[in-house]
Length: 329
Length: 116
Length: 109
Image (tube, rainbow over all chains, first blue to last red; front, top):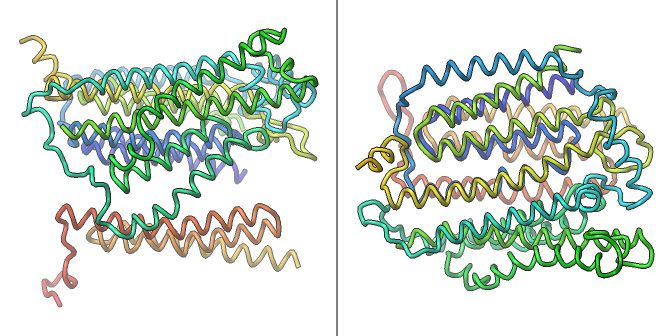
């Protein structure tokens, strides 16, 4: 009962934050509120027994997404022009659709019902076969990396494509007319003159990086995995870029290395798949990678999660540098 | 229990429409992108809510626990979160280029300049 | 013994909640940014310490306690840094802290 009340409290906070986001006119405030919204959603997911999803939403939604939005805001404007044309029509459409969806939810199975259709076919099969075929404690990683490995290789390639797309868009030499761009800020020095954030930040960066590596390799035993780890490692290097300046971060990890990271992770994933074929199984069949099928599954899962983590780190860092380096006209 | 059990789905409907309102009614392009990410978060909430089993716990095998929540919706949403941030990053890149070329990120000003 | 630990952790958790509430109330009622941050920093320090110590008492001497201690250390390091960065940013953008207090009667000290 208490859990349900707490859940309703968190949901109410989430809805209030979403309303504040939509009606606030300062885009900067809206972006920070979006970070708070993502963190509240992560808390909701955790309350609904989705630990991996909560970690991913917190790392990617509340962490990296806020940085990307702020990077884009620095290049565009911060104030939204108020007033929209079709406000009443939009409100009408939205209200009617809400009522229709709420009417449709009365047919849904009761919350938490174990006899719901979603729990009948594949879900219990995955829970049953994971200790037998893959033997790792985290069922979500087992399903993500092994049972539904094709979906995950597709996802890695989506991340790769988005990284390539952003690099195409923002690496072109700017032909901007001078009156359109913001005046270049001298922010590429970083926070060089601010002692407290610099000292504390530099102290924390190795620990954040270490935590990212921990999350990467403990994805089998607890919540974790490649996506969360990629976001955390990227966050530590973004922190370094914010503190020391853009050039220092590009000296530490140049764009060439980032391009290798982006391609290398996807290549590693594909290579594991092809190696499965070369050793006699199907594409992305890990059981043939070692003499014991379960050990083969473990090897396959660790390597592909590593590939995922490497690509996600490379893409997030490249996108950040693409936005940050754009301000210097 | 039925009404309390439906609150999660109602919040899904409300969040969905808040995000959708931001996409259709706000002229600023970045506000539209933020509305789109709220819309996506509502869909994630729907799927994770459907995966919860009463009395179960997170699908990480431990001793002494026999009932687990369904791992399949969680796997789908993990993929969806990462795809969402990819599309947001690409959308933000396009918005930055639009600002450089058109000088504004308000939808009607962009359409005016296009018609010139 | 477990009852004593339970009661102690209840006291800590309720105290932490009280400090969080006071911090939030202060952030609402204070006049400008600097005083609001001063009130909100109450949440980050006393609120976080008391709530986390309460949970640590419940976890006993397991790995979870060490992780909670690490989280507490991280929070105590980063929250004051964030307040410092926020105040620096505010001064840079021109928001000056007000001198003295202004009473409704109009007289300032």
